[in-house]
Picture 1: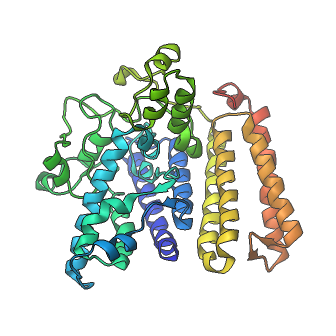
Picture 2: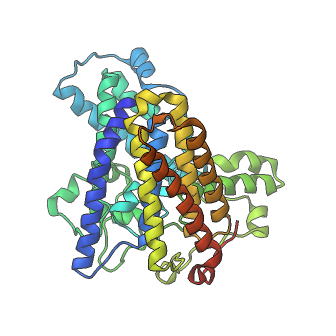
Picture 3: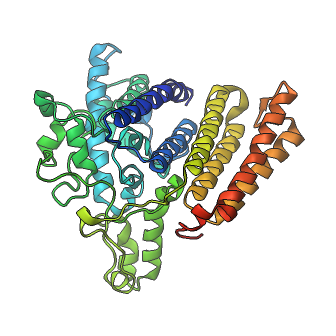
Length: 423
């Protein structure tokens, strides 16, 4: 896990810089592809995923070293050939895992976060799941295990393979000629994120588009059909933690409501979107039918509220970096507690972004918890505070959070006039 934490620390600055470059370019050409709250939500999702993956918060069904030890026929040394075979095997595995996520109800829950943005930009690439609670991906790496690819090679390839999927989440790059026949490009991935009937569940490859072309899931971006982004059942929230479990909760509720016991069992493994007939009739879902006239989710925030949300995002990002930098010294138990606090932070300020009344109470609880920790232990989640100014700064931050969240929940007339769902 320390290797992954190091990789995340290296990658975060590059991602942030590229996102700001894209925002700046959009401003320069007067064709902006970012909406502030959507981008903040996307970046917040990236934080939650980084924490979850760094701590390894999943029950692993079978590990790759186990598969390699029991299935290896060859024993390739760690040379350029090993990394080449490992990378191709990783990409092949990613294709089938991605296809499973799109085709099966239960597995769609862990992928819907990535498609939940109704925009398409570099920030939405960071909408990665925290709902992958069962680690089964090594099963797709059986070809690599048979080839004898060493576990340390897979550990190095995995974050590189993931990070290489960042660049093609943009609308500013058109088709790339002959490259379209080898690699996944922005044009191809725009198709993948689109909800047009012509584009749904197409272009599932991660790096090499040959898998789509070989297995019948390739679709070219058509000039007369502009992609419309999002999901057919809009999430209608900026809260990335809720988005991660919305679909799963829907499955639980449908399984509870249906009177057919066979449907209670099979709903989890049926095609994505399948629902029991009795529940579908009594509790219909609102699905986007006309993608060209859909209304995008928008809480219409005032500029100062956007700055507040961005401030809280930066604060959470700093907390994440501190956790990663001190990962070895504070230990897993303290890192887990720290992660829970950052998750609560993101849940709190994204609830304020959604104009939910509960946002203030979550932020109040979190801030009082933070103040209590600092005053009682004299440190911050196991990280020593060497100067009184550090303690004063943290306490001031929490007091500001309490006042600001109260203002945006109960006093800001602009926010109160745009209230959406209450929880």
